[in-house]
Image (cartoon, rainbow, N blue to C red):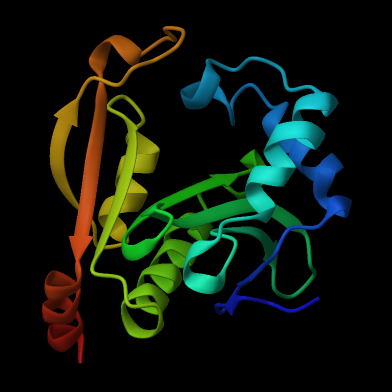
Length: 189
């Protein structure tokens, strides 16, 4: 299967129908879904009818916007990354996201994949600004955003269809612009 991007330890590739069970296991883990839907169980029907089609298609950038993440060495499914334009007709602003299984937490995979997507976005895909959001109480995800180079932009209150634990504290948005990334890249050389 063609790979979209490789890092030292990760391979990002397009999703296929064969990923349905892996996605079900990921979204059925209450800890993985704690800050998404409060940890509610997944259903096979939702994965097949909504999740997998959403992860397989996005018309902008010539890419789907979502990639299955695997360990490069052994091919173990770790979860997925999102690098999707907010406007499907304009790739200037993209949203960065990730969802990894618990076995992958704390190993630097989220930061490694995020940095690689950021670099590719600014060098190859014409991206001007990257944004990422999470619940204010999701300290782990906020730390990944910071380690990937994004900076805190604002707190805001999202429109949650159903309140979950922590949603009363609102959400946060982080960003990285091309100009800031170029400045950081020059200093790193």
